[in-house]
Amino acid sequence: MLLCLAAICAAVIGGVAVLRLNRASTASLFARLPADDAVVVYIDFHALRNAGVLRLLGASRMLQEPEYRSFIEQTGFDYLNDLDSALVSFHSSGTYFLLRGRFDWKNLAEYTVNQGGSCYNTLCKINGSTPERKISYFPLQPGIMALAVSQDDSAVTRLEERRPRRKIEIPAEPVWSLIPAGAIRDNANGPAGTRAFARALEGSDAVLFAAGLEGQGILLRMDAACRTHAAASALTGQLREVTARLRDLLARENQAPNASDLSGVLAAGAFEQKELHVLGRWPVERAFLQNLAGGAL
Image (cartoon, rainbow, N blue to C red; front, side, top):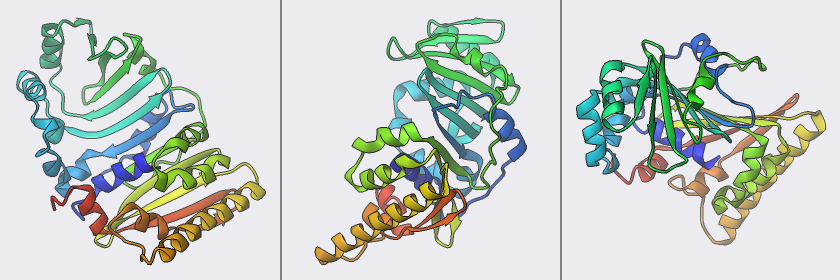
């Protein structure tokens, strides 16, 4: 939950979201990912670019590293300008990317070979920073890169074909994450502010987090799918109880929920049950976004 919240908040710091989603195309790409028991994240970089958020990221130290600047100079590719969307699967066998943007495939292949990698036909391979980080990629379409980081140096070939799986309704928001129950359980050792919420969500089959613009901030929403009405009812009660306990804790410490920190965001949560689904809403105000950005806005 915290990972998704951080990505979502960073996505809308500019206060303006310009959506350009092609849901049918995104759903088609989603079918290629090894998504079973994997956390899947989608980010619309085109919307973030129009919102001015990527200019904020461009000032960070990481993006000014010599290696990254060299990569830009040699390949002509800079995600701040050239990447439009990213669909990513964090799977047990590796991390898989389907990237939409503008790629100079010739420059990318030359860079790969110059860095000690190899390209055969359209499939390129290169070693990453550690032995288990082997990078492979190929052009799925002229404007779509399939890429994988795995111990298997040909892992990207898993993205060549679509997989039969249940259909997913692609959210309208520019940033979303689909999280399976196993990944939620793994968050039990996460930050204290999210531990109780993660434990409450362990009873769900999968949870969708998504966010879009609302006023000067964003609205983070949750859709947790349960197997039975009883499970959905129990989860709704648990989430309400966790939120109430957080509010009580803040009150005992003579603190009002602070919209500029995580406790304030979580304390503002509201939940309801609809059939087998538990729906949650957290308004995220600009003050929290500014703190997340280090006061850069």
